[in-house]
Image 1 (cartoon, helix red, strand yellow):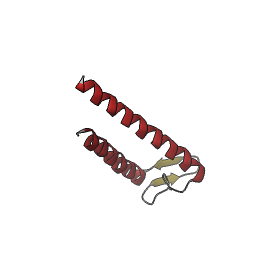
Image 2 (image 1 turned 30 degrees about the horizontal axis):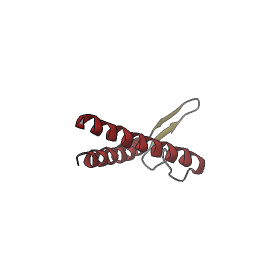
Image 3 (image 1 turned 90 degrees about the vertical axis):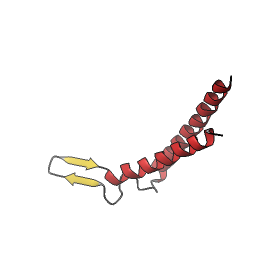
Image 4 (image 1 turned 135 degrees about the vertical axis):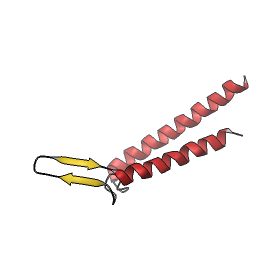
Length: 79
């Protein structure tokens, strides 16, 4: 019964995190105040008929944020 309770808590926390992330993404697309995707260090190449975009710094920033979220969830579920 204990493992089911912990799994339930983990699923609830994951759901809350996903809802919060979804709300932030929806708000960010309306206000565009984060600058995600247009950070210094993101690679953009524009040719005559070609456009190449690789968001290096944006990927690194999102990786750090997601790592912190996973660490926080892991820390809170250990108790």
